Image (cartoon, rainbow, N blue to C red; front, top):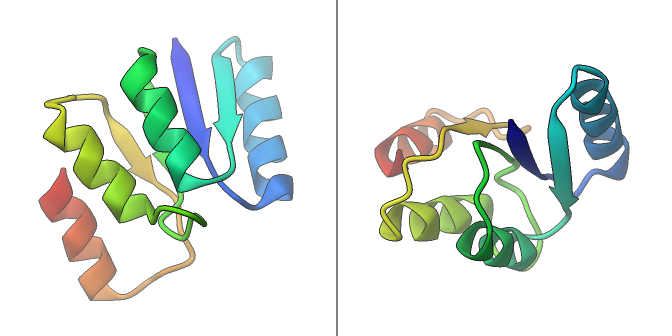
Length: 94
């Protein structure tokens, strides 16, 4: 299984990637939204772990573009944003 982590917090991204690799997963890490969008358009991933507060291109826009390409990849949103509005937007975008 190949996982893309889109997270700008280096410590969090490193911890997640190390744990997932230790569990046998192939993991790629990107630290901004534009790179995440480019990677998702160019390569196949089985899962996306997505931070909403990415620099360059917001996580919700990455998700919007991903779904606009008709991708059904499962997305786990990982964020410090805890507003109901953010949760609803994430769910609405798929």
